Image 1 (cartoon, rainbow, N blue to C red):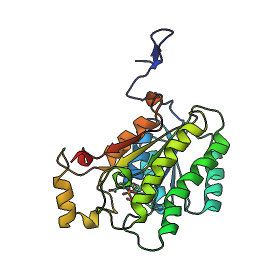
Image 2: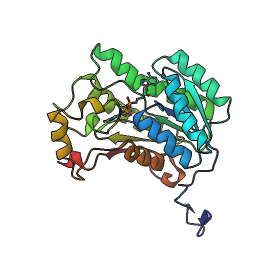
Image 3: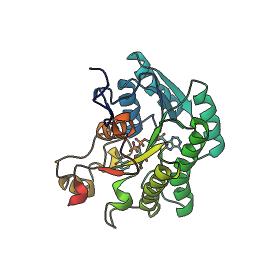
Image 4: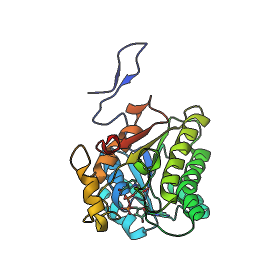
Length: 261
Ligand SMILES: NC(=O)c1ccc[n+]([C@@H]2O[C@H](COP(=O)([O-])OP(=O)(O)OC[C@H]3O[C@@H](n4cnc5c(N)ncnc54)[C@H](O)[C@@H]3O)[C@@H](O)[C@H]2O)c1
């Protein structure tokens, strides 16, 4: 069924199988070589978007691109360390050479168990998302664009004592604040929302899956399992899409309800 309007006091009624996206529109997904970013890139391609797969792992980004293009989709691999502003500038130039970019998923971030200087990791985690987003805004102008930042339930939804490094909950709470800032600063262009994943089975989590702490966490999830990267990707794509046109500035927990316990 085509998108339609029911009358003057109505918005567009989208064909929800496409979420209102126009095929060929471009999305940048950072950290697209693995885990949540990879699932989001593949999901975006299934929704008809052209994907710019950004990652510091160039061969990994290329593998995601190959998976998309072998299925008939459109994708470009961009090798970039998003913690380095000069590389971010270059990555935007490379990306925009393929056409305008309407959508951004800020997903890459330091590992939650990373040790080392608090301020450095905080800057990497929050500063990189701010840098990627503001440089994008410089280019994308006054169009109906949207972005989704990946926060975490460790940010402002989960209690203390559940995280290893102090920077991680601080950074993820910071990303929630950054999201609300971006959602309102430019009169809703772009819309900005965040997804706060619960524990999600990705390569960075897999080595810890067998630990008693992780087993305990899994047992407390009301839906009875840990998250899959695809659970996060579906939520990201919805918030990103025109179908979510009236959702702006939210931090959506995607955690099977674990933060209610
Ligand atoms: N897995 C979880 O349980 C979980 C829970 C909450 C939030 N998150 C968040 O989700 C995001 C993705 O996590 P994941 O579990 O999918 O991780 P992952 O390790 O599977 O994938 C992360 C990807 O990001 C890339 N990356 C890391 N730093 C980068 C940089 N500086 N520049 C470019 N690329 C970089 C890596 O190369 C990798 O491909 C992170 O922001 C993480 O904090 C994850």
